[in-house]
Length: 124
Image (cartoon, rainbow, N blue to C red; front, top):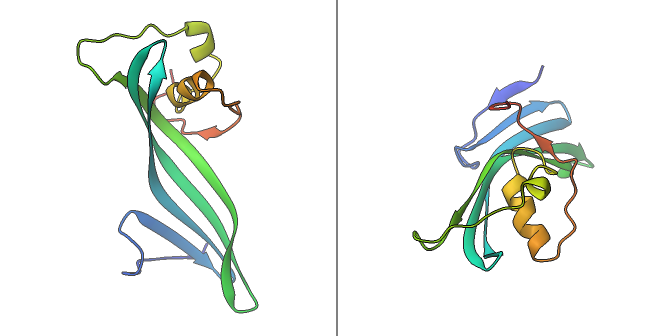
């Protein structure tokens, strides 16, 4: 397997493995979105990691693929006194890891893919 190295040019939350002309980096990520769900203003936060697959061609490194891994998410009403009732049948159509993010995105009109990768941690 390739060498695992630390480079001060990369932030501490970036981990990389280099093997010849190929490399993989892992970066923590957070997606935040605010919007209305059933008339209630909510914040959605989704955390996970990006795995970037890199290759060196003609002496230059470039990204070949970015694979997101969604680990967990949550939805909170902006007002502490507010509550929001979610449609469980819609919520359960999406995988654990990004289901609340997918829920709010469907509410604003986006078509959400259901096959994104997710962490196996915390699965019931």
